[in-house]
Length: 455
Image (cartoon, helix red, strand yellow):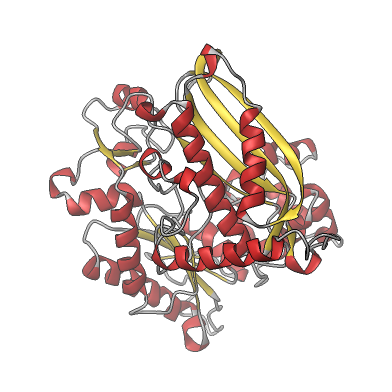
């Protein structure tokens, strides 16, 4: 493994240096770092960014000074104060973080074109020609870091990962933080990956780790042993129980296998935690409309059709104790419902379906304070596999589809409030656009397609 302090361990060797194909950039403590950049009085102090300045919410970002005291993403405000009494809470300013995101992209592109934005604090660049030499790539990584510091802000730091594929480059960014520069080349993969934990791999959470443990994979060494077997590809696929396993086999072996390969999304959705002033049925209904509007636009943008819609509502109440949670009050009752649809894309059909689900929600005094909403469009199929119905040409669906496409075009260009159902207008006050931990709000930023996330 090469690092900034030890770029190539065998520089005096006659063997040629290995190549890398991708540079992955991960901004460190991004939201908090931006706040420290624009407010010098916050520098070198523990800072936490929160959705709103109330005690019932959680930290959505923490500066490295706060992280050193145990405060991290998802830590509740009360707990953060106990861990770090001198911590400064700052209400998130998502317009500011999007503005700085654009500045960072421009700074990176003075060194190398950005191939894809993965989230508001992550982007990836493909290396070509002489850039692929490890020494040249390490130098390029340093220049990218310097460009961000000089052109955007002195407090902004990033970790840069270099590797044969995007997945490993992402892994490399997490191996040295903050301000790291790490290269994973094929010749060091086995030894370097063996130092990690299973959950250090993107896509391996607690549930996936348990699944692997149940199948006898308790460490990265166990997983690497499977990769080396004669039928390792098939066995890795069996471990994951999906095509994702075979992709992991390619990625962990250093193959430059496309991260966007083949499979379309199975669902698309948005969720939102209501501020205390808007925890009432009227505001919640308006917000549900906005969530649906955003999800439908994303779905149509990816040329997908939905056959199911789901709605989840959590209410402030006397239900189970949730403990530390980013989703609101410590005691809550939740409710969910789903209904099937003929494959559709248009707003009118989806709004009717959402209205039916809304009318099924629990009633009574205990259910008058909704604080969390989620709308999901599921059972997605690509346009090429969409099944036409006998009545498609007779029920006005073609006209509704053209209307939806026109609305999407205008909203993508001028902002999502340009054209919207009248019943959704109240949502713009009740649910301002937010960036969910690691996403660029695609309808907030008119010039850049974003990554999915919460409203």
